[in-house]
Length: 332
Image 1 (spheres, rainbow, N blue to C red):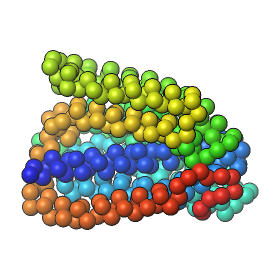
Image 2: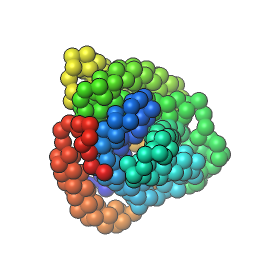
Image 3: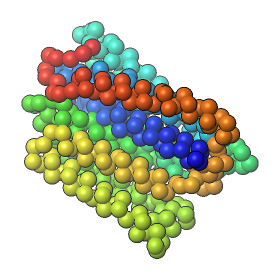
Image 4: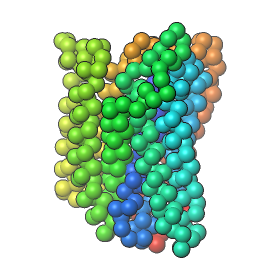
């Protein structure tokens, strides 16, 4: 068994689990100013109040796992993205405080509404910028980051930041379509159309830009016969996009959210295809960055217990709080 590859899949699973689970509650916060009435905002927040902090468990698992299992990758990546990561953590603190205090005040509720929106927006933007920085490649000398403090601030990273913000807004809108009814569902459905168009446009722009950034990306996607192996990703993406807009137009509640999740999963698969076998483009491989096999074996024992536990309690929480959330109902 190749432990480095196994752990790469486990870390990737933790990352995509965080993105799709925390993505819709960050997206709900991004849409907050557009929901207009306080009652709509109350209901929207109540759809995610029971589960938002559990969703962030996957962020801890992904970051902690990267530090423990791929220490070289952690040591190179973190100095390159300190600024967006710190901004993300501060933004998540703002969101957490807003959850706790928004329902406890009336006069100052506007302040917590603003905090919830800003925290959600900045967290999403920071994650997208960090992703773009990693995709565009890091300057490595020996076994250390050799780039500058502001290498994360580029047109490409800003575009990926915007793509993540709009993508999370799509997840948030389709989540509200699935979890609410009446006026709020209609508002969310309308914004899901706009966010869907924006998400697909920015996914297309990033996908077309990436192959021209590095020769290995271009060869992976456009050379023959590799193009035959990767063709299912754009084909399935087109089908997911069709499903999204068709289900929104036909009044479905659950399928738009599932279609949006499919778009994110396919985008993540595309990144994996572009990166493999590197963990840091252009030349730090999974095996070079991995800890010794003895450490990977020891950590795998803990992961084999911890990850199923997280999956069980996450699934149980979603099952307990399943169904529509109506105005005046909620957990806070």
